Amino acid sequence: MALDPPTDALALITPPEPPPPGRRLLFLCGAAILLAIGAGLLAEALMALIALVTNLAFYGRYSAAATSPAGNHLGFWVVVIPVAGALVVGLMARYGSPAIRGHGIPEVMERILLHESRIAPGITALKPVSTAISIGTGGPFGAEGPIIATGGALGSLAGQVLRVTADERKTLLAAGAAAGMAATFGAPVSSTLLAIELLLFEYRPRSLAPVALATATATAVHYLFHGIEPVFAIPDIISEPAGPALVAYVVLGGLVGLIAVLVTKGLYAIEDGFERLPIHWMWWPAIGALAVGLAGWLEPHVLGVGYDNITAILGGSLVGRALLVLAVLKCVAWAIALGSGTAGGTLAPLFTIGGAAGSLLTGAAIATFPGLGLDVRIGALVGMGAMFTGASRALLTSIVFAFETTRQPLGLLPLLAGCTGAYLISLLRMRTTIMTERLARRGVPVITEYAVDHLSQVAAGEFASRGVITLPAGQTLAATRAWLAGAGAIATHQGFPLVDETGAVVGLLTRRDLLASEFPETLQLRALVHRAPVVASESNTLREVADLMVHEKVGRVPLIARDGSRRVIGILSRSDLLSAHERRLDAARPAAPTYGWPTSGT
Image (cartoon, rainbow, N blue to C red; front, top):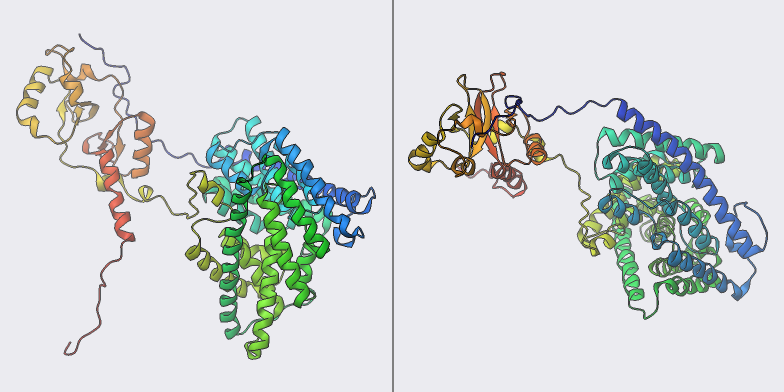
C-alpha cells in the first residue's frame, strides 16, 4: 500500500517565537484597573457593612459609622452576640456555599492551583456578607482576608466572562485579590508582593504589570475615602537603631517567629479537634464563638477587627499587663473561632499578637539590658512583621507592609533583620505555613521558592546526541530493512531523520514505521512521511524543545543547523531532556573545597 506524502511535508514545524508583550498585556492592564476600582469599592462597602452590623449588634443603633464593640455595656450578655452571628454564618455556609468558610487566602490559593483560577460567582456576594456578620458580631478577625478573597472572586468572575486563557484568568484573580488588600490598608507595594509570594507562583512581566496597576488604583480609592495618612500611625518618628540593637532585633524576630510556629500548629490542632466532633460542621462556628464571647466579656478589646489595638501597640500606649491579657485572649479567641471554620481574616490578629509579643519582649530586654538602645515601638513593629513572616513566610510582603502602614523609614532596617530571623526559624521548625497547611493535607504540593527554569538556561545543541544516522528519503523500504538487519541493528536510537539529495531534513521515521508489515518493500521512505518534520535549531533552549515535544506529541526532535540549510546536526530525545537535569542536581550537592589551607613548606 502506497502513501501519498502530505503537501506540507517540507514545511518544518519549529518552536514558535515567544510573542512580544502587546495588545494582550494592555488589555489585561486595563481590565485590572477596572477590577481594582470594583475591589476598592467592595472593600469600602464591606467595612461599612461590618460597622453597621457592629452598631446594630452591640449598641442597637442603625449606623454605618466605624465603631469598636469594646465600648459596649452589655455585661455577660455580650457572650450571646458572637454565638448568634456564628449561627447565621454556619447556616450561610451550609445552604449557601461552604467556600465562605476560612480566612480567604488559602481558599484563593486552592482555586488557583486546582481549579484554573475559577471561583463560583456567588462567593463574590456571600463571602463579604458572612464576614460582615462574623466580625460585626464580635469575631476577632481581620477584614482584609475576606476582602482579598472577594477581590479574587471578582477577578475570577471577570476571567470567566472575558475570553482569556487560564494564565490570564490567574493574573486577573491575583490583581483583584491584591487590590482588595491595597484598598484596605493603602499599601500598594506590599499588596503586589503578597500576590507574587502567595498567589501568582511566578514573577513575569505579563502578570506583574496588571497586578501593580491594580494595587496602585485600589490605593487611590483608599486615599479617596480615608486620605493619605498611614493606617497605623505612630505619633513620633522612631530613632535610628544602633548596631547592638540590630542584633537584638534579629533575636527578637526569631523569638516571635517561634511564637508564630506555635500559633500556626495550635490553630490546625484546634481545627483537627473540631473535625472529630460528632456534630455537623454547620454548628462548629457557634461553639468557637462561645470562646470569643467569653474572651470579649473578660477583655472587650478582643472583639472585632481591632485595628485600633494595633495602633495603640505600635504607639507604645498599650503596655504591661493590659497588653499581655489582650494578646493572650485575642490569640485564644481567634484560633478557636477560626479553627471552627467561620469566616474571617488572619492578618489583623497576627499583627496584634506579634506586635504585642514584640513590645513585651522588647520591654523585658530594656529592663535587663538598658544599654542596648532598644525602642519598644520598634520592637512592636518588628514583632508585627515577624509574626506574619513566621506564619506565612511572605518575607518581603511583611517587611514592606509594616513600613507602608506606619511610614517609618528608620524601621526598615530592624524589620529586615527581625523578619529574616523569623523567616529562618519558620523554615527550620515548620514544613508548611498557615496558608499552605490545609492544601498540603489535601495532597496539593505548594512550592513557594521561585527559580529560573533550568531547561530555559540550556541551549538544545549542548545536550543533543551527535553522530545522527540519517536515511536517504529516496531509499526503498527493502534496502532499509536489510540495513536494519545488518549494520543498522547496532544503532542505539529509535528515530531516523530522512534527508533529501541536498541533505535537508524532510521527515523522521521510527523503527516501528520501517518494520511495519503493511507497506510494500518497493516503497520509498519519503512515501511513509505522514506529517511535516518537527525540528528545532541548536540555538533553541531545552525548554522550547520540551514544549514543542509536548505540543506535537513526539518523543524525539532532530536539530538543524542555525545557518538555514536544514542540515541535521543532532537529535534530542526525552531521555536527553532528563539527563540535562544532572547539572542542576550537581549544583545542589556539596562539593569538595577547591583550595585547602596552606601547609608548612608550601
